[in-house]
Length: 170
Figure 1 (cartoon, rainbow, N blue to C red):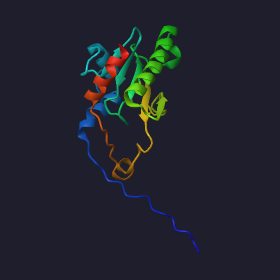
Figure 2 (figure 1 turned 60 degrees about the vertical axis):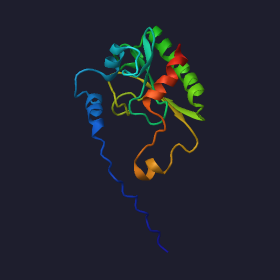
Figure 3 (figure 1 turned 135 degrees about the vertical axis):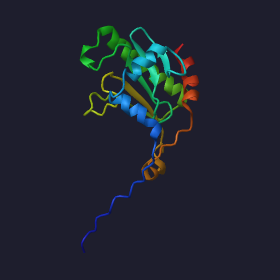
Figure 4 (figure 1 turned 60 degrees about the horizontal axis):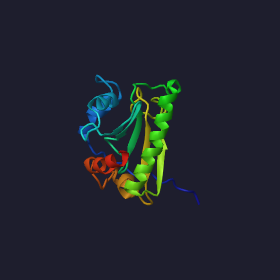
């Protein structure tokens, strides 16, 4: 009896035109860097900067994969991990640790995805300003919506996440 191949499910396209300005900026099609622009505004709900250190900062992801999706960035505009100064490197990793601890307190996730995508081929959406991603994860957080509906459901607004995290960095 011959095996029949299953056809992949047809994907529904959901238009999100509000993301276009983000994509253009991430590709370098607009002036400036989204992280540098946010850093100029300082710690604020508008900038999504949760904490600003001497050489590195913590910022919420404007288009999160999960609640609490946060990034740790150098304050200096650089895409070159190897050229970070020793103080930048140290603060970047201290903030990575501090951010994970804050997310653990705020959200009690069962796990994390933590990583850095470097370069366009490496998966970086913003290629000119390196950044670590911290994504809290829970059992069952990937349900039928992203798999079948191509839609991600977040249970909390960025404003609520911001207000929850800022006090944990004081």
